[in-house]
Amino acid sequence: MLSYESLVGGVSDADFARHAESEWIPYWASETPPTDEMNSFENHKPHNMTPHRLAAFTLLAASTFCLTRSVIAAEPATAAQAEAMVDLETFPLPAGAERTQAPRLAELNYTTPEPTAAAAAYVVQLLTQQGCEKQPGGYAAGEYASEAFAKKGYVVQLAVSPGGQGKGTWVRLSHQGNVSPSDVPVPANAEKQHAFSAVAMYGSPASVEETVAACRERMLATGWSPYGEVIGTASYRKNAVVADLSIQAAPAQAGATVIGVSTHLVSLELPAPPSAINLRYTDGTTDLGFDCDRSADEVAAFYREALGPLGWRATTDKPLEIDWKLVTIFRDAGQQMITLATHDFEGKTRAFLNHQNADEVAEDERLASVELGRKATYQFKDRPTVDVKLLAGLEGAPTDEWAVKVDAKKHDPFLVADEVVSRLVSDGWTAAEHAADGPAIHVRRLYKDDRFIHVIAAKAPKRDPWVAIVGIGVNVRAM
Image (cartoon, rainbow, N blue to C red; front, side, top):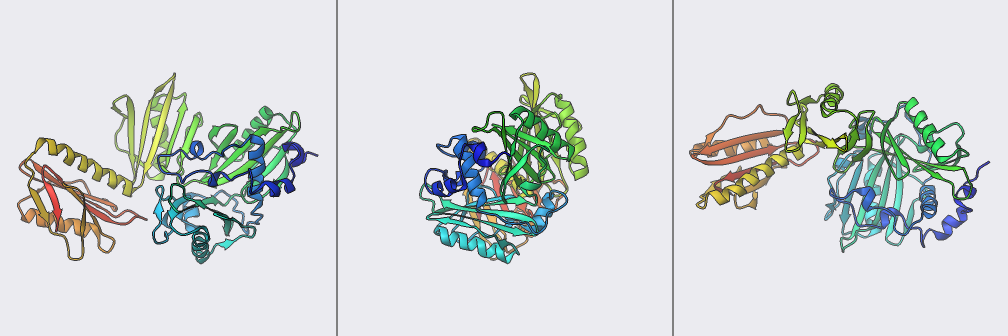
């Protein structure tokens, strides 16, 4: 029988405990908080860790939480099912906290001025109020802490560590979904060594190459789709749950292999063609990239077929040629957008998908108008200031001389925008025809001679509503 001690070279559980606070430092404690611009894998690798030490610490960290999931779902959860249990996208932040990247269903990162104990206690209280049960075996040492929570088979992990660069305390919440690592299919000859909430470890007498092939065969046979591969770890997705299988040679036993299995939730279920290789999905920015041997037209056709039943519609019959890429834009009834861009790369088609929720689409609209206003400052040296009177109780914060943004949390942003347009029309501006209004974004464009004003209102789900007023050839001041 293969033992974990023999697989990793004689490292016992006692060794894990003895070294926990010395050289084996958790990856989430070794870096500054992630941002949307940072690739979490490349920028949050453990420091000074050999594969031997990394495998050892992975088991140590996972062994902190020896929970039993009260309900194991027959199928991996969809994003909607996971959202109904715990939605990190709407998790309220404590006073003084700042997000370090856009909130998502599956992950929340923020910094807070509170010390570690207070920061952890805040999260514990809120998750408990949402029906989550804190699991035994939480870890706390100095400025570091971690906890696990369970709710009807779903697991949420909490990690707290120093924020770095004088930014107080970093808090990271990750939604693991409803699939225990122990329930992920593995080859019949794989023998379970350890199983915890965050990781399951197996030993196999087969070679690494044989084990990789056998794992792939088992995953595909049970309905999981390949979803990327990097540095010895193959990922597979089923609904909104991703299983990561790390397959390594056992350093202490020639010819044997170690299989480490972990699972996590993704915020968005973006499909990929079966032939996709070099696949990379980033949850913080909800984008997907890959290479494949299909043509650009075939990739676009795949997404028309795959996204159509989910409520997405392409805005053009064929991809548009923009610079050196072919671009297809998909929109849904909620005014969200998926942009597919493809181009040739070393004899293959390289594809990149980016999803934007309605608030992000509205923000892009605002920024595009602001950029037009900036360019107009070179064209029009004499820019009159237009005073825009807002509804009582509203204040507009200037973002530029020619643009203001209004916080509309206590008002209907569409009514606010309509009132702004009405008052501008009364002052001699003409409202241009506009596209049909959607449930989340309204855009109005007005003109007077060769000057323009854009009024953009956003009321996207899970986001604070706002209104932007942008002058093009005129400055704008909210009154």
